[in-house]
Image 1 (cartoon, rainbow over the protein chains, first blue to last red):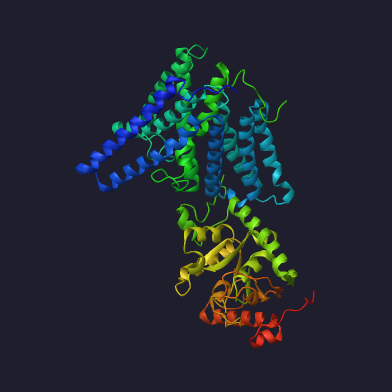
Image 2: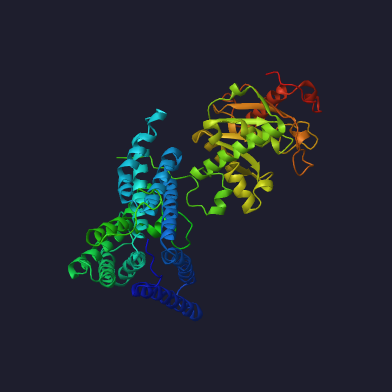
Length: 325
Length: 251
């Protein structure tokens, strides 16, 4: 497996530098607000809390990408398990420990397939794991609740195993760092842009019953910003490949932009259906891990298959590193 | 289409608060840790204490409450180790909050390995007992508790507190009386660590208190019946106040 230098690509340097700069500016702005007594104490406290969470989260998100392939796969595995834990406790799936255990095995298997660089197994796991979850609880001869527990198990596996593991598989590409950093930061930025445009422009609500705080202006603004940013960064990342044409780059940007907001709205729908505000409490100012990473869930497979169509991941790299063959 | 989506009772609680919450529900991690702990415990009890259990067939399917005389930390460990399957997965030991839930580390151990729920002696609120009673029935749990309230320093059984009655009076939940022999000799309250010594556990027939009202009189009557049932399982000498030498098991 070819390993590139950490900062071999200028986009990697640019994103890391921009992230550090944004955090520093944010700290300076909030610090000035605090010194001059601007805003309410509650707002300042909330801002410091959010900034603190970002200062912890960003190294946790970007650190594994900079450290290397195995770190990415390990981090995505842990992220998938953390998302599953929050999901199963919110939906009640945890009361079916056998189904939860099968989903855990599915998450581990999907990430193992990525670690092994075995694409055949990676894609085979979608139907195979679904089959195992579907059959898993039948021998217990307890049909009551079968559809609910099986559907929740498949839902969880598809999102946190099969879906997220696409990020792991991307790490088989020697030049994975700029791609992953672009996805992680633009998806996070999409949330911030939606919030900012919504506050600045206001206007009609997007889907008031699903997510009362989201507005149409916020959604369109975030889509525009994300599309342009992804297209611009992709221009540098995929230069010289069939993907590097304006219409494909913009299409890719739209896919990431829509995927990010769709993931957010999907989690809002889940929370509204259950009747809870946050999925967890682990990240002060954000809620749970899922509240922060919901936008990545749908972007990961969508971006993977778009890039795969034009460029591919890990092409020409050795495969089945662990299983051989 | 309506599904029964019921979040965990402890959803939304910060991690540390969750450890001490009476609403804590077990997830996969807790179940795996708990079963590993029980397996280790069974090995220890067999190797160092040659634990003998009689009357295991008296154990009903959950929910039920397992009660016994209390003179040692080995008591709760022994009772939790003998449960199997569904009953073991649903079992909570009701443990003294001021002993087992004082630090985060001890709370994490009590919560994840032993699956204990804290009871705060002398300052238990009626709402907390109501939560325990509600969860016992709705979540079909198994409680392991010692109605004496504390370990008997001399090994002789003390009168039962009416708290057991609050949990079960007026419900169909059975109470399974047990008598433990040898625990006080192996690990009395005066020692920091246990020493090897034979243990014997007698499990009696379940008692039911559906006929008793959920009033103080009902609770006290339930406690009286429970105490009598546990005393009836003790060998004659133990009932008189001093623990007997442990001999071979009748079964």
